[in-house]
Image 1 (cartoon, helix red, strand yellow):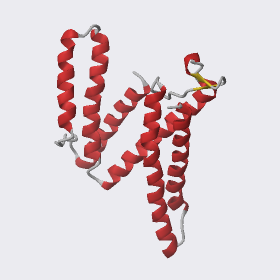
Image 2 (tube, helix red, strand yellow; image 1 turned 180 degrees about the horizontal axis):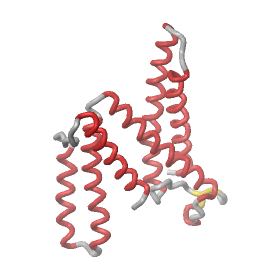
Image 3 (tube, rainbow, N blue to C red; image 1 turned 60 degrees about the vertical axis):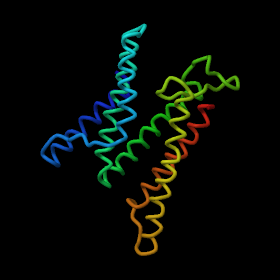
Image 4 (cartoon, one colour; image 1 turned 180 degrees about the vertical axis):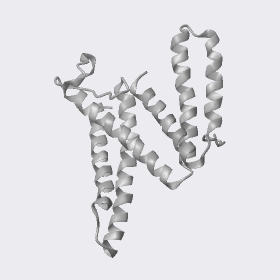
Length: 193
């Protein structure tokens, strides 16, 4: 199990526990048309097991799509409430920060992968992805999310500032998402993607 799979197990546990505590029952899977293309691909990929050269490699890739289906179900359920949507954005941002920090470390020599050496003394960052391009894509998708979150919370702070004094709790989300954006923008750069 890698860090991503362990995080998924933790997410499933928290999701189920929250449903049991708040609703006194297990969470239910809500239907959405978003499932259709993933289920179609999942079914087609299932058929490829009959011609797989390596059943363990096939199973590893197939299970990733099962995890994606489960993630869609969890995110769709959490996204039904405003607080759930904010937690999803926060969790994605934390994942981006973690990967960006790992990538920055790798860029300055932390990876030691000679085939990723650029400019003679830096390494292309790959985060927890194992390859620089998926890492760069992940950073490129999450950086705008962090930037817009900083802007949204900043707008809230500006509106409140015009009416009442600000508290530290008002400013912290703006700073968090702004710093996250900066780290992820650097992550895109160090991926050299």
